[in-house]
Length: 296
Length: 49
Image 1 (cartoon, rainbow over the protein chains, first blue to last red):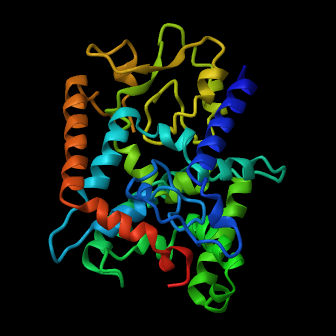
Image 2: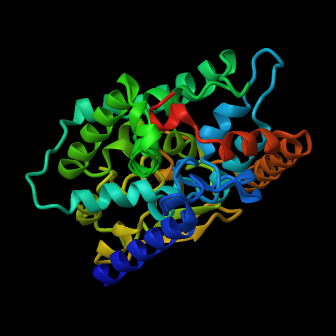
């Protein structure tokens, strides 16, 4: 049952990743470097660099930074509204099911190398880092600085994001000799971040999602309010701890089924021997146990 | 920290507000900015700019 669930989730993650990067011509030598059609007006729900040769949509984090403009007091209504709507519908469901970079990290974690358990205090402190990334690198700095295209300056994309290096930088550099000639300190820095991220992903479950990802941070703000949510049947739950032991994000679903750290992958639902956990739609009257679960 | 459950009606109202935000942004041309950014190779994103 759990195996079947894992396969189905991997299939959906991979299928979505392929679908949103299906511009095959971008990967052909001599072809156009990236897709430039009208679909790029729309953002994909997960982290996916719009400079990936195959990308058909825009990265929501890059798009959000682009629209911010402090001089014209321009807020990014389009992207913030879009992401908020997804958040109110399903919270961090996207992280668990529709994020290609999340899948890549999960596959790296399957490589049989010794795993590292980050000490609880350090883990807890590092979790706040993604909110710093969101508020400073995605919201604040792009609001006050402009890029050459006269869009908001993409601070997070430029100095932090390993997704752009993996999905955009490396393929483009490999396909384009001119780009290879212009590699400098920034590429080396971003490549270093990517390598750290890859090594960390082999030893720790989804470290980028836990500690860095501003998109996960944004969606997490809606976990408490989202319509699709985790349900805990308190009468069925025997607090055996199996769900918590299966959770890669270090959540205890029997205490906090709608924790801000939960990516709603559903591993705990399959692990529960008493079938006490399930996905559900928020109802007008709170279910028994739901009130207890509303903790960060 | 304990958090109170957000009432379902509030979620629906906020969801409608989010969709309205999205539509408002689209109407005032923010999708053009997104398109402009996304159809050009983002040199900063890939580590070349």
